Length: 135
Image (cartoon, rainbow, N blue to C red; front, side, top):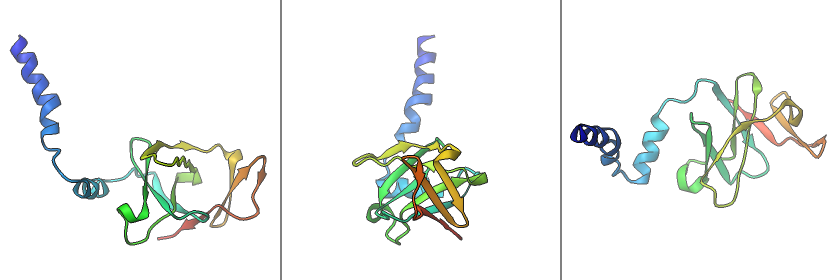
C-alpha cells in the first residue's frame, strides 16, 4: 500500500515538475500561446503611464511586466476589459510581479465613446484615464 501511494505521489506531483527546465523566454512564449478567457474581448490603453503593461491570466491575476522585459514591439499601458465594458481594476505596486484583478463597481468609472474616466475622490477627472484599443 505504501509503495502504491508513493508511486501515485511521484506520478502526480513530481513528474509534471520534471519538464520545468525551460528558460523564462520559452515559458513566456508558451504562456502567450495559450488560449485566453473568451470574455476578454479587448483592452484599454493606460494614457498617463505607458511604462507597464499587463497580461491577464485565466486564474484571475494580472501579471505586470515592464515593456522592455517582455514585449519589445512596444505594446504597453494596457488594461483589459470584459464583456459589457466591465473593467478589471489595476493594481500596480513597485516590485510586484503579479496582482489579483477585481472588477470595478460601476460608481468608480464611466465610459464615453472610446474613453474611460475613473472616479477620483468622488468626482470624475476631466481627462480620460484609458482609451479603448481597437484591433
